[in-house]
Image 1 (tube, rainbow over the protein chains, first blue to last red):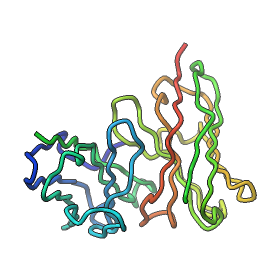
Image 2 (spheres, helix red, strand yellow; image 1 turned 90 degrees about the horizontal axis):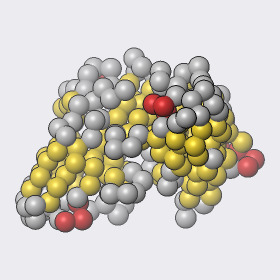
Image 3 (cartoon, rainbow over the protein chains, first blue to last red; image 1 turned 90 degrees about the vertical axis):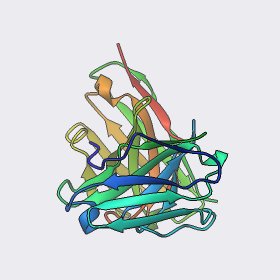
Image 4 (cartoon, chains in turn blue, orange; image 1 turned 135 degrees about the horizontal axis):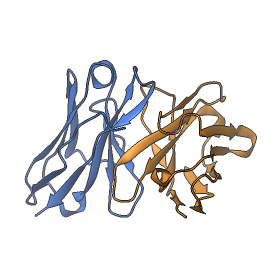
Length: 110
Length: 120
């Protein structure tokens, strides 16, 4: 069950900034940290951002995350063609006692 | 190098059973929680189940609760998902993923997935 809401699509030209929102509730985003995953076409997901805004080694600094209240955002600045992928937010939900993923956002580089 | 390799997927009839496996290498398996996440064709990610490092704590999504059993064998570096009473809506690629714990933790490594198709 997707209880985190994301826009289905986002797009931009190379070099532009794209922002993806993730809306949740007090039982998930509002009470825990948010993680973001990138899924390139035909591949397994890869983790991109953890603990709201932390980048693992190897992830370019053009990817950044933020959280405020029951919402989170992923920003991609300096958009590149290799950023075309599906992006998912995720968090633990204390009411469901399980992880919840966002509905996913497909990023297209025009 | 951390590796997670799933297997056991295939074509099964509605009502049937399947046991998925995930073999881990490149890290101390017994120190990590493990998770199953699935993705139906053309759809988004759906968390299925999580098991703590020792197997003490186990969680399931409502969609599989009562029909699935997650387990692990730390001596064999292996994670399992026994799925029973399979339905068409269980058709998906099933990924195993590693995390440091359950709850406020991210999935830092994922396998390549194994496809389960439930169809008559």
